[in-house]
Image (spheres, one colour):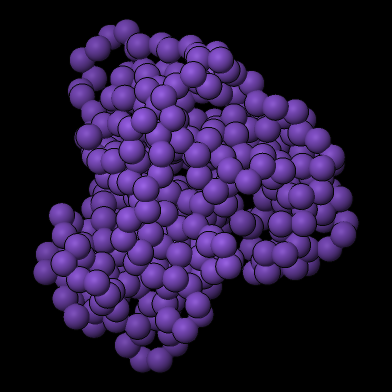
Length: 379
């Protein structure tokens, strides 16, 4: 059975750009916190802000997967791959569509990345086993198309702000096992670039030449986010380690925390039920689920994701347990020190973080997903 691996969701286009200092410090700052210390952090409250849209299926509000990127000081692009990109500004109460996603002449197909370029835009379009760089004018009309050099079968291109980045999974059919690599590019057409992160993925072994094995029901996957000065904040997912690096790769700070809780049979049952109900783009059978269950970790990944802010702070997603309704997040200062915590619906995703505001893609009580700004309030 041919499958498209779910791992290709690119994190880069869903994180904000952050700031940081230079690489002058020769000794990284190390922080180690216990479970008790994390629980005693001040708890921020969530205050609902502007609702951008609710996904009712009648417009282009993202139904399942949302991608966002800040284009400039005034504009944010938000879309679901395979649907039309929406441009939002603080001054407008409604989004402005950028061109049209479809199969007709003049349409772009599946947009995976977008950035502002001059008076127009550059868009990365995914096709059957290939990518193309499209040039769009200010109205979203396609004015140019150039094939992007062939990249790996489990690679994808994105933009963080205006910075092109390639994320790739590799080596799953080698003795050493799979890995995640994050490469900053000079151009979307660049075939080399600068390696920012190379992280081992212990469970990623086997599969075929082009397709890695199915991910376990519960297992750690590395996450990362760029900083404004070209550095990176990343985590292996498990154990609890978050590391901030400068643009030259020098480690600025490291945060270590406690081990995650044990995975129970109920957790595996709930996670399997979530996947079975998720209308995945590829079919899975009972044998697939049994394999994914048997290869799951015995403890939960301690870190579920990282997001950077323009001022250099960091948000870290903590343990996400299927039997819980909410997941905990930690806010770190510019030196990687946890200073506060807050909770969100465990299915919510942070698309952008700016100041004390978060742009969330989250479910509502009636189940339709919404895009909404929320504000973090001090206790």
